[in-house]
Length: 326
Image 1 (tube, helix red, strand yellow):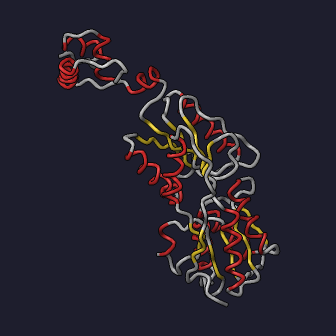
Image 2 (cartoon, helix red, strand yellow):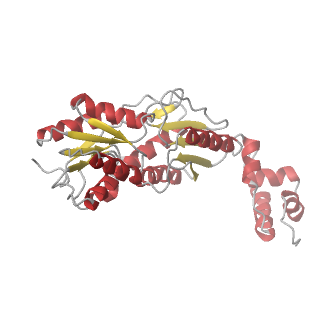
């Protein structure tokens, strides 16, 4: 056996069949191969250590058994939960998931990174693409060739979309906080050009229009920075609503650093209900989204031949110790 990487030609010669027969036996074809010949080709491939060129197969077929997931910050539990749902559906269908992370949102650079990722994916001919990053207000995302594209969240014109009721969930949270006795509330928001941020802020302020807004990065550090800035300005609200749980966790850390006990001194609420928020101290009030199910639904939507319009994914307020009754 040659020390060089074996080729399909080597497999065909070893099995004593034509190149076309070897290709059909290994790569699948509408033209069936005699079972005896197919087993001979497969045995030769095993003996030679032949591995099919998946990218070449994808080009030949126009698609592949790979689905692509494009996320923002892979370290963010929000994206990890969505990814688990995508992987679950892919496993059920015998597909492989590749994950591309564009990094925490950083303005136009992030949009450029997502476009570059989609350009790279076109050459891989994925069966489907799921876009899980937050959309930017007023921008379009170009679908990738050779695969179907589904986006999570609103603001993705022209794409199959799993719409999340961010606005309604934030409004419901504001209503619950009012019922608990909170009147002076501040919003710790991510970049205002993100559709998710806009929808959550607008929904919350539809119920509490007096809520002031502080913008920072859509990260734990951003939540810490926004809370620190609010306190440094002499503001002492009854409660802060961070538009994501990771921002809320950063805000809680900033409160502790200044001697304020979260929940006791200032109430804190988040959004997404990522798994760890029930375990922080105090347990964090949040707006729950079925993140794994959202990921699963997005891949199913991307793979569907004739997708039906779906209702927005509902959000549910979960009150915990971080927002006690006043």
